[in-house]
Image (cartoon, rainbow, N blue to C red; front, side, top):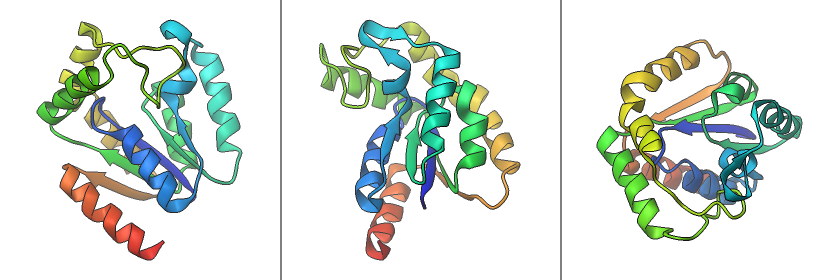
Length: 170
């Protein structure tokens, strides 16, 4: 595991997992949210995101968490390992609400500078419909990958068991 793409619904814990994996594997971690959002939630734009993501992927080791359709295809093709956190809708909605409360009036460590935590209807609805609208497309993309280790976790307990085993072998 030297090039890891972590994908899944908002609130699933992608950034938390990326940080843990980075510590276990001693690999640099990149959060797409931190790259995409400039201070005060100003986006850098699609082309700049693609450029920055491609720069990261030219390095030998990386863990990249996030969805961002503009870069997903290339990330999945370049990754030697893909981790898909495919948790229940309720679990992910709980995750975004918990995160909103935890980081109220603060910027998360995995977010761009001065992007105070927020929860709007658009994002809530995206998470609410992710398993119905987005997850099937993710599985379609994953089915086309060759020579890539693919791990799909449907619960935090499955993921924790995997991480415990990984720590033993690292």
